Amino acid sequence: MAERVFCIDLGSAFTKVSLRQDPGADSRLLTLATASGGEASFCFPTVVAVDRRGAKPAVSIGEKAADMQAGSGVEVYRNWKKWLFATPQASGRSHQSPLEALLESDELRQLADKFGVANGQIHYLQQLVVVARSLISGPGGRVVSAESQQHANAPLLTGHYLLALRQYVLEACNRLPATGLRYEAIPVRISVPAFALPTDADPHPACKILTDALQKAGWPLHPDRPIVAEPYSNAIGILTKATNILKRTSLDLGGMFSKGPVISVLKDPTHYPSYRALVMDVGAYTTDFAAVELKPGGDATANPDVGFSVRQQSVPLGISDLDTAIEAALPKEKSELLRRLKAIDWDDFRKAVYTDRKGVKHPTGVVIGGPSDEGAVSDTLSRFAGQLVAKVVTFCEELAPTGLQELILTGGGAFIPSIRDALIQAAQAGGQSYSKTHAPALKKTAGAPPVVKLDEAFTRGGSALGGTSIYFEKEYY
Ligand SMILES: Nc1ncnc2c1ncn2[C@@H]1O[C@H](COP(=O)(O)OP(=O)(O)OP(=O)(O)O)[C@@H](O)[C@H]1O
Ligand SMILES: [Mg+2]
Image (tube, rainbow, N blue to C red; front, top):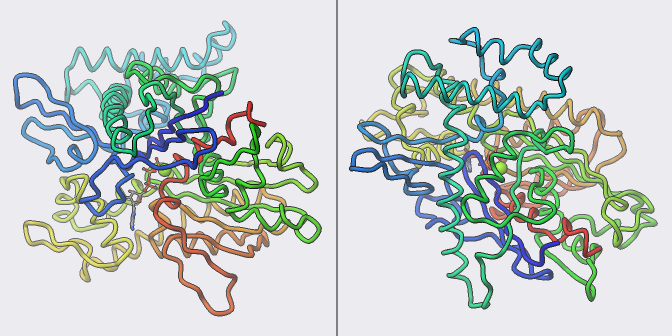
């Protein structure tokens, strides 16, 4: 049990950190950035820059790193989360040595099973070989494939990032109204894609890398639940509206969920015998699905595993894949300019080109994504939406076709109108229907079910907020 807790949602594009400073205090997002780049002040770029121009390499993270131009002694790393979670064999087999091929073969896995060697240990062995090769050949050496290099870098970048993030978080806490709390002693929880959720039998190696890096950086881990899945925590953050309510010393689930859309069932179980929400989050690396059900007759004020059931999935398809596709679709000169764009300018590019469907003017005077690129942009957007739709349909088909009360769309990708519309449409697959849709920047349409406009904090910060919910502290039940 933790009376107070931080939750880090290490997003591939932006990290969000939430704090619950008392058992019954509302969860709040910490202001880590200056918001000068047009992003919300709780969205802190998951970017690491290494400046090798001085006597010693200087590492920076966040906004400062996002504003740095890569090249001439400066390395800028973004979107490295996927390399932390992807297994080496998923990233291609080009430039593989026979030893790497052996380490990644099914035969070795079968042998490992026979001898009782855990999957995680094989993964470490693979990483060891990758790191050893990069040490021998040096950065950019021909022996090392780009993918292997990315795999080898990801744990190092994670370490640098979480170490420096702690300072930003503690400074943000010190700017809060005085509480007398020792923020350094408050434990932390981190959210991960659902496919990486550790099971007792086989913890995902990335979870161990993350918890080790957190501890090394001085973060005390939450004593019994240091890791939570992103879809689950996002759903809880949104459905409780980040409230934490106690009745004397026990959790008041009814009160917590009464601000969110669950209220109809809790207040009037005769007319609303069951409740279900589908939450879809389009992130930079993954798109997350969570179907949260309040079971009929379940006692919502007791153990949540009695009252609630959650089906969740994270698929590795997100806005960073759309970025890669747009780079490939544009004329060579423009894609070259895009490839060299600073992380901070990419954020402006996405808003302008994907959401507002306007071009952006590069300092060289070239307009990227404007009228002359309209065909390439709209084709790329619709192809990407089509890929996402296929994932939504698969997830929805596996749900029982009883009416779902609410559809909730979150993540930066939910701001992009063509993607949002395609997802809302796809969520009706298999005859699902919704009495209400919650999403950012939604407009009401006559004759359609009611819509609720989600604000930026819940669109982007749901996983961090939910990760600090007292809902996850079993001792309060
Ligand atoms: N208004 C907008 N229009 C277009 N794109 C946007 C908008 N707002 C945010 N984005 C982009 O949406 C993407 C996803 O943002 P989000 O913060 O949800 O990702 P994340 O949490 O970092 O990723 P993940 O959860 O997959 O690790 C980012 O690349 C961000 O730049
Ligand atoms: Mg996210």
